[in-house]
Image (cartoon, rainbow, N blue to C red):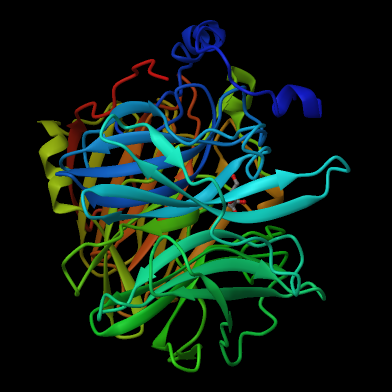
Length: 494
Ligand code: FRU
């Protein structure tokens, strides 16, 4: 793996031409996705500023142009009319040595339209001469030309009561539309993850510290909470965040997680009253920093998109000088005390050809590079091996054992293994058994929706040229397969 010096990874992007050669190499990578948002070069991590504005869905991603490294971060801008087909608009927020507050990165945040302009709330990751971090909550206005104008001063600076790990502003508007909150992920001085809250009656100024969010019973869940948000879905509040520096049962040595607690938010006492436990948002291997679209009208659902990756993890495409992609956008609803995540109905538009399922001499079916697989499953054990070789060996195993009511996804038999220490299998209990699976495969990812969104397993996978088959081992499943049309364009736009 390449070693990067600080100078190399924090180099400012001055001339887009510098990236052309890199881009030309990257687009030849066999693992470039065909219908998932991915970086034009370098590394993508969190989705930012997801919002409906000016008749378009806007989405930005954390982007380090130089390679598969967490270096200087920009916001890269993409837009869509339907959440399915996406167009590159180019780089948006740029870290700036002269402005200074974000000299070492325009970190994650959210967006909110005010009047006819879009405002971006983000963390200015500042480092001083001694390389000490100072986090500022900054704001920029997106002009009609798509170019962001930064406000001369941040909305507020670091809170001295916490460590310098305070970031990822999520802007929240109260129903009276007169009170606004910004919540930030933070860390106490004795290393506990927290959320801190700022308040104002004006979105552009007058922000003061309102206090720390109390979440009774969850005071010791990890050492830092990143990317917090509070969503209102189906009459309930949902607190979402990414606790770090904590191991969770069944998730190997991994210490970065993305999860949620359902409950009620009391803004007067700044208390989130939990109604249930902390649950992981995604049962797969590679999912983090999920963000919901701001300002959607529907109170019963939210739309969520996440980074299909993990902090600190390496991926096989690192050698091809790029890393990361986003998940498909998903519809979020609540059933009982759980979030339900379904693929958006619009995704059906991407179905291309329905495949005639014919098996080779080993009982394996050819697997298209980009496909949707749908299985209706009758009670009983069920097994589906995806990305096997021609003879049905190896691959990623999806196994359901009726007696235990347990579904397990195991990727340890793929040829290209990675992040092994985080564990190579994930299990989830399905109290009501398994009735259906909807699986989306792209060139280097798999998203498995179980029982109409009751659980989702999201994972990067890097199948080799031989791992292009699928084996349905059970005879209690009725299967449909479609090829999927390309929906992201490899357009070099900076
Ligand atoms: C989460 C995160 C955020 C931060 C951003 C930097 O993945 O660490 O907390 O703002 O990434 O790229």
